[in-house]
Amino acid sequence: MHTVRVEPRGLVVEVNQGESVAEAAWRLGFSWPTRCYGQAECMLCFVRVLDGELSTEPAGEEELLALRTRLPRRLRSPLVRLACRLKVTGDGVVVEKRGVRAPDE
Image 1 (cartoon, helix red, strand yellow):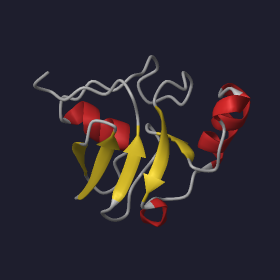
Image 2: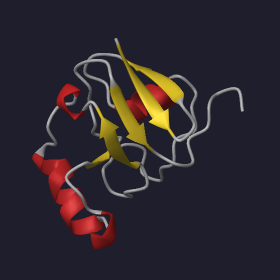
Image 3: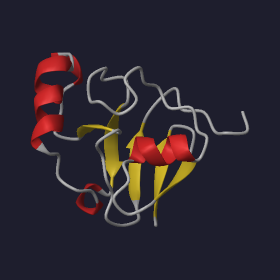
Image 4: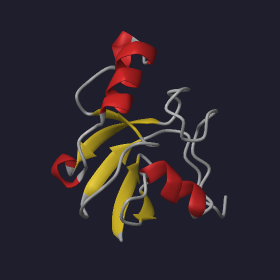
């Protein structure tokens, strides 16, 4: 299990091996913006990786295609990923995502 910190709120999500950040957040009861719930279609779950990029799996073809064709150009960057596809391989990953709420809120 690895931890991911979600800024600007400083929330911590515990992610199991092979699980995406969004899947882990939903499993733990977090409210994470989405419409498609993990289908890489709505682009609402996108995050900006602020730290720990080397502790993430590289984006796959499906994610890259979705980012290239569905995400507005002004939001595109090598550090922008889809939380529904972002998998972590170690601790120290920090992402920026507004609109995330902890289970107790």
